[in-house]
Amino acid sequence: MVDPRMRKIYFQFYQETYKSSVLDRKTKELIAIAASLATHCHGCLQGHIKKALKYGATKEELSETIAITMGVGAASIVDLTDIAAESLRIRHFDGESEDSPLRGQALIRSISRRKARVTAMRAPSTVRMLKRCAISPRFH
Image (cartoon, rainbow, N blue to C red; front, side, top):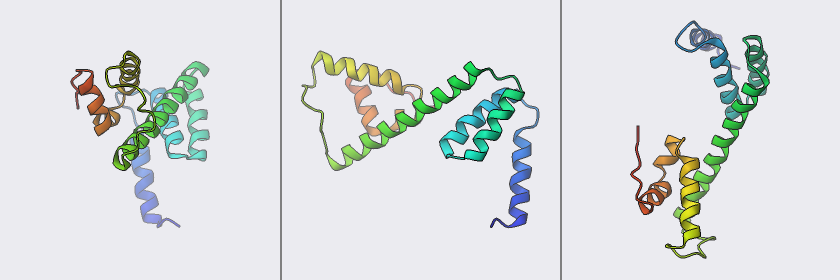
């Protein structure tokens, strides 16, 4: 259903991204696996797994790539639901006081998990958590 001219433009762009550059081909394929998982592209996923193996990816590297993608996916769900809850003013799990040591530990664990995701760091709820823990958020 895509206009042949647009397909050609897409394919030229796609080929350009796989030309020799600062990233080696195996790394590009591992990134492509993560992107395929994130975008739910079944055919892409199979093709990029085959290519990653062809370019020397180990089962451990494939597993870690998938695990990282799962972590980012899970973090995005937490992030979206935090934003929705805040917008709707829903506070299901606020039984602990603000200065509870358990709450502080949970916030620190939450912050540690989220540090890797710049988009999560920009979420209003996360910025407030960081401020409560006296940690300055850094946006790059």
